Length: 280
Image 1 (tube, one colour):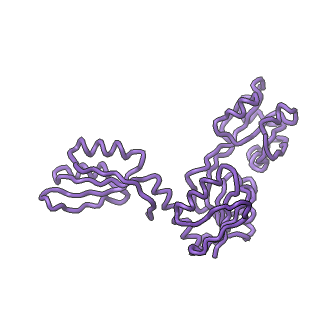
Image 2: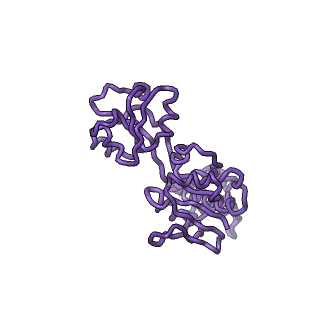
Image 3: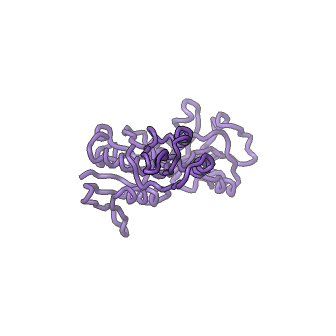
């Protein structure tokens, strides 16, 4: 039985559980429970603070974990990153008061910067001299309270910073998303590989759909150019002479346009269906 860490709260908590359950794992946090066992799949899930997960995995106490790449970078520990997941996107941005003369990240040198991710901030600005004020939360209020001259915080829309009288400057210091990490050396274990493959299959299923249609032979080549699939489309001859059934995976965001093009070309019986999971 492998031990897997998952976030116990925050923005990554619900998407992570939804992803795992959609992949056939049985995991649920009941009350204040710290773990959940899935005997059928041979996994014990541990609910931990997202920022603590990298340490538990790196120290070998757990086989792998799901958390944000920013938390891993902050701890500065060694992992094997197995798979980027399609949620938990965020950016670490610097912000200063509207009246500040700072125009870019370079001009932050010498200022006191408040942040909850001091490791990333120090690594980004090194060897330039910056004074880092480490806070656990509510970073945006640090300037107003006089303990910092700038902040570096995780930004989504930036509305919280604006409400605090701050403006974003420069490019993101770090771009993050949820990812599956394993302890170095355990990434090839059979159960970890199965977990990775299931998660990867679910990501593919979200990004792709299956299109099926009937196509006369005279336009078959042009139809296949519209739906090339991952390797090539599946083609089956129909009972009706000169007609073929075609099936192919297409990008979800392109699916409706592809249906329009197939219809205009002369294909018939065009069907579009979702994919629950896949192995590519």
